[in-house]
Image 1 (cartoon, rainbow, N blue to C red):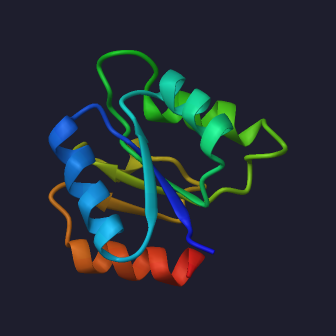
Image 2: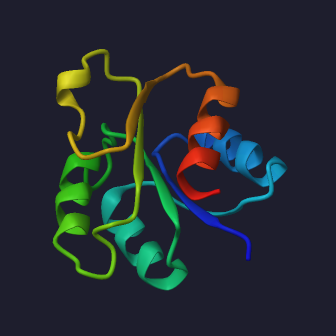
Length: 118
């Protein structure tokens, strides 16, 4: 069964880039441009993993989305990879499986995803 990744980022170029990386490596993808939308997409798509930007000017920021996610029994154990342009890691989410700074190494990202969900 193909694993599905939810890409949450407000930059359409980043969304397309991540989607292409994951699709090229055999994963299905879905996307959202902010946390509120991501929550709705997540309910419909049931992703196996989420990549999450922290700073999204329109709508709900990544940390708020993560707090909502972690309170939902059905979704609280979905692994999250933070991919952010914010320079400081202390602004990240402690329970994320990893944190990558933009720009990131796509091969490293794919390796992390494969080790996490297969």
